[in-house]
Image 1 (cartoon, helix red, strand yellow):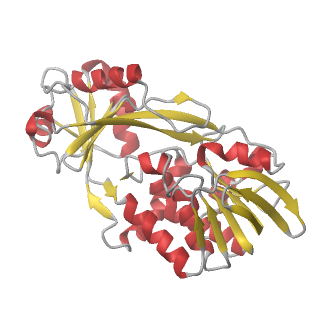
Image 2 (tube, rainbow, N blue to C red):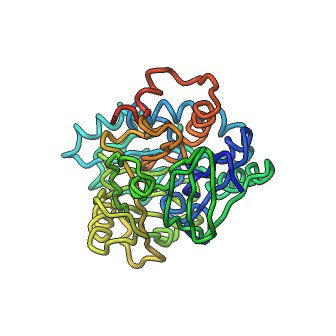
Length: 358
């Protein structure tokens, strides 16, 4: 069967765009793994903090908030806290300004998170404009909408060849041969490889590893109402999750695309930075893992038709912001492919366009 739109990649970018495009024509999603959202999307910290990221990311996140609010049960209150040592005053001040936080005393911070060390923590600030995203619900909501409109998802369908054919593209996958009028490249860390396979000039994306560890609730505390906590300059972060605490070194180590795993030494260094700021030592890990956050050369998302091959559409470079920007991004994909007007400013659309790399 020939489809209108073939999307390579079943993470949040691909599946949300697929749901939107299913209103415009027939859609096929090819996912190489056994289920959707296996790689970066399945390993996300799952926070909606619309002031987190570079200016184009913030604009997309703010444009996504109304859509999140319209989905029952999608967001849950979390809040945000930034902590700093005495020698991190300058970095702390930049974080407070960038995130729009309010300074609080160390005593007030310890009232919210009782394990904070009064000897190590010199500065603290908080905000309530951060929410947990139910990422599984979001993925399944998009998949349900896609299938309800006649779209198809094929898993275990790793792509092995892409060929230009009259009127579009032919894609060879482990699940068969497929044809489509427009090819959407939402392959995460593999986007440049997919482009090269299609004979399209790669842009130069870099995947960066980020490791995480799940710890038992420190000191047996109920962590469910604790905010997400960042070390100044995003030197580490901690987030409550299902009665436990996720802690990340927040590292960025360039990697080739692969099924990532945590680096033990990097994880140990990050846990040490976390331990420095708390009174409860890390005695054991429940689990650890890693994901790849993929960025374009200018670290801004790339959304739009290729400058030289307009029926090849880039949907790439979400970095760590894929979930929180996904409603606005999916809408933009539909607007661009459907020839509709966009509510996003023209200047923002230009910042996102692949034409900037032509």
